[in-house]
Length: 453
Image (cartoon, rainbow, N blue to C red):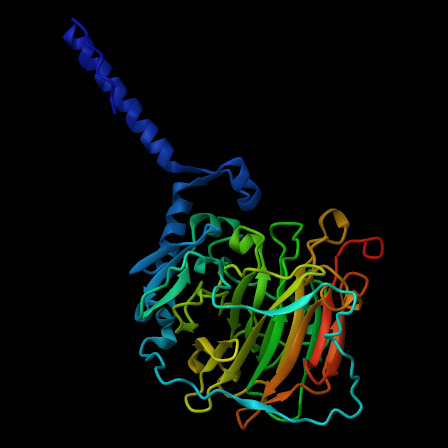
């Protein structure tokens, strides 16, 4: 506001008012032209000032993905969970889903695991915790932090984590927000039998994978949840299932992914979070994390994809895990995601895929990190618990009860899996089998060390 100076000279008074109005207008324009970012946020965003032009583009993008809520929940960890009417969710903005009707009929769940022969497989009591303080625990109803106050989204809505300006600012660009890095030209030089492993792009893995002779219509696993440390904001650590189909050369790869991840760039903190991802063109232009673009149709109001998981496992302490199932509904053909024994989260419509509209040809389970090689040294970003596979239960992270869904919509234990880790001095993996955990493996590592310089 302009300040009025009282003067016995009327002309001078009017002049001073005019000058102050000009100054006030200038300050308003200047303040709107730049969005100030504090020193603390600077470490995460990389920007101290943001022009009004860029801010305007970000806000327009956020308006597309943040749908108007009917109710909002403030999570203790700082997240905002919007309860959005299910017919207003981002998925239905997809051009191939303009006339899509949300599936109301419950999909046919895969039948229980078939009995399989175990002759020749190593049997080791993975649950033998003699001398170890760890206990295996199943997560209860309030395993996401936004549940802690007891608030729920109303019936007929879905729970969606709200994206913020600072979330987008941490990304390299608006276009790249919520997307995995585009696969490099080295895609063609990666190991053919390990399709998601790309040498030379900074991603390192410890995975198990299978290519059974029968057709694949889904996969399941129970995944140990930890809170690995991340060295740099543009690095991440994740543990997930990949359901894949199509050519692993060029841009035809279709992928459905789900698990937990720690990604400071994507979420602005170091908490493990439930996540999903999809692509129908080898990560080129289609797909995204969670609900940060159109595609995945959420049907659950109590699960927020991208929300923090709590509690998590601790070394020699209680062990927490989540069970994830991805499978194709044999009746309508959509790829559904389930948590635990029977909780449905939502589905990827068959229309958004090419090869996966039919079936999958490979499944992978395991961990992945990004190694930025700052100052020419390996990152200290941890995979899993930060312990090597050899350390075992309550120290190393695990995947257990690896299963495949076949053409009869039946679950069976994954057989003859192959394991791979590019740099076993930094991260490794060891698999085995027993009657309780079926096919399983330990994996992970600390990253940078004397043996991993």
